[in-house]
Image 1 (cartoon, rainbow, N blue to C red):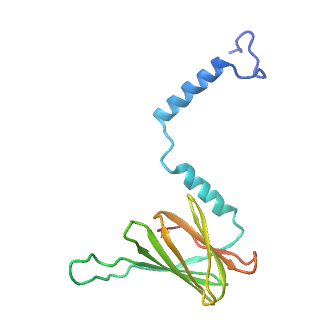
Image 2 (tube, rainbow, N blue to C red):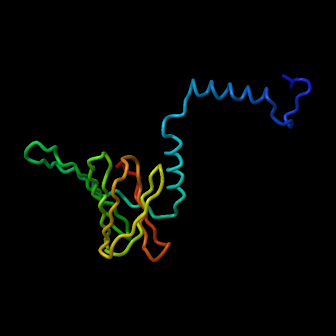
Image 3 (cartoon, rainbow, N blue to C red):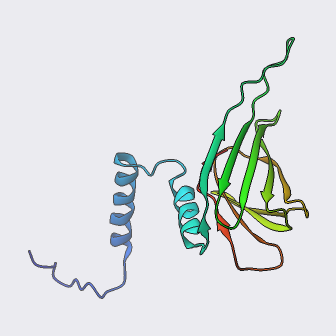
Length: 165
């Protein structure tokens, strides 16, 4: 099949080309739409892959079965521990009244650390105290990963696997 007369692939796009591309985009969106959140999850995965950090292992997951007497709903919390040669990090996830998650964390050996929370929607960071304790309040539920490194250095970072908050 030959190209139409007067057509060259080196020519700039004209209005007919743009109309055809718009039709193709409309048909693609109708027949095979991009899943919700795919772009954000992809960017999140690319960001994590780009980090040059040792990846911690998920060591222990515990879902306590606690309840409260009376009319109050049961207390829900999850404790997750990550380990690496350099550091162990334990986090406790507790739901807040507004549907978000509070993250309380502890690192051992105790030291002042820079703790970075990576989420599909962005990055938050905090410093732990000298005992290795840190907190993230009011975090939206969803996939997340932590990067931990000494506060005074940009080297020695370790990263957790992605977990669901």
